Length: 151
Image (tube, rainbow, N blue to C red; front, top):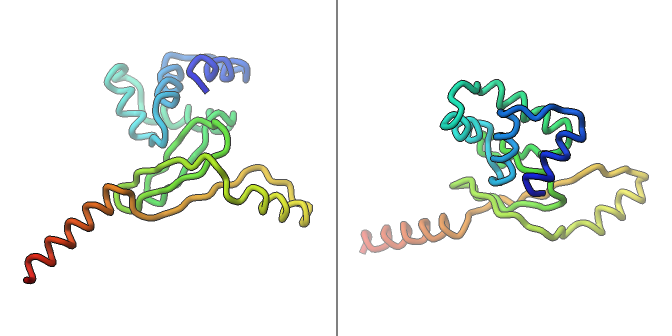
């Protein structure tokens, strides 16, 4: 969803577009997997009088409206992204980076299970935890150096 469509959706839901909300929406339309702290830091550079509480309250409003999703990558930081359809994540346990997977390997199986149990699915998420290319490379190099020191 682009920035203009996001603003339209927000207004359509009956909310006033304050300068703070506009900046938060702009940041969310530019960044994926961003934390409330990171949003706050970006806003402070242009609007130093905006509090962290303002950012947090507005993120909660956006969550309630279904315009954004809350993500937990098991790194102690809650992250947010626009609610732009169904996708999953590969998450690095070392650096916390996340890569989106657009296809869903479970769609048909989940749907079959839901139908057989008369279960109404509202959403689901699939997260794969491991190590990204950069962290694997660093681990391999570190392992090579350890091997060299022993010889």
